[in-house]
Image (cartoon, rainbow, N blue to C red; front, side, top):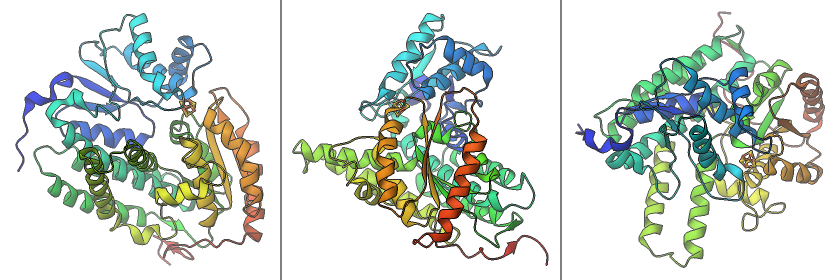
Length: 435
Ligand code: SF4
């Protein structure tokens, strides 16, 4: 049993912390991780027309769409009758780097100031300061938060690989919701050590695995597999991408969506590169990063171990593999950020037997624009696999026709493709129905 000291939750103690809904599951489990150290956290509600209106009112049109959605959602929360600037706080991580993401947090703070909400606390951890706002609980939170991201990624993958085959609409969404609640009830537990929490999380993932296995589904024929890459917020946030994954499913495809942990592995890789470049290969900083990466990897393997049979053919790439695939187009030593991951992952998915690649990006996103310029060559050098960019900015467009046509293209490619898709054990039959 681990004794927790209340005093070290300092700056956020007694606050209600709102976690942006980059992905629904990720925000929900991340909030549970905060609750495990005594901070009342919850995921932001899904954005809506009002949130978009508020976000657009305080932006000039030059900002990235994820920033508009996040700001609008915060302002929407601030409109609710029980909101109080003393009690409520927003979580808005920040980072340096080549694109506009680093501006999100100061921008949100300046708008809150402008609308008279300058007293609202905005928690903005960076890769450098970690989670100093939670004082002595920082290390504990980071470990649980990592596990929260890992399990939410796996549950989303379960959702996307089961839902296209379900026999009764809604069954898989229900299994996903029940599974999120299941893992959250473990993640949010207080006063248990990391070892015990991992044991309980692994048990919860076994229950989740069985829950998805019980969904009545027809796996007689695999559907066209569409790899989905792109800007991290837009590809994961269902409001921002206008439910692109469901749309792919509606037209007969199955989506493999790039997950959140990919970004964490990438930033770890970049940190190692920076430390070496600074001539500190033998240093405490290097040792700290080696240990952190090892712990993260061990946690992920322990969780993956109980679901790996169900993910045969759906294995995620090691980050070095993704960077290697991207190298001829965007070498990691010359290019930075999501464009490198999107190109590398698209090629990885080609090798996994995908029938098409969709890139989801906000309108004017520099990553999406760079990738769009590179994809024709990527396609040409990979058997002419269909690749299509979709851009989103909250205005209504006819995504249905474009998706329908794209899935048809993917089907045609699938009939002549040279790469073979590996399928898990449940393919080729109906499951969860009495014969
Ligand atoms: S990745 Fe694209 S959308 Fe995200 S902050 Fe950078 S430019 Fe904006």
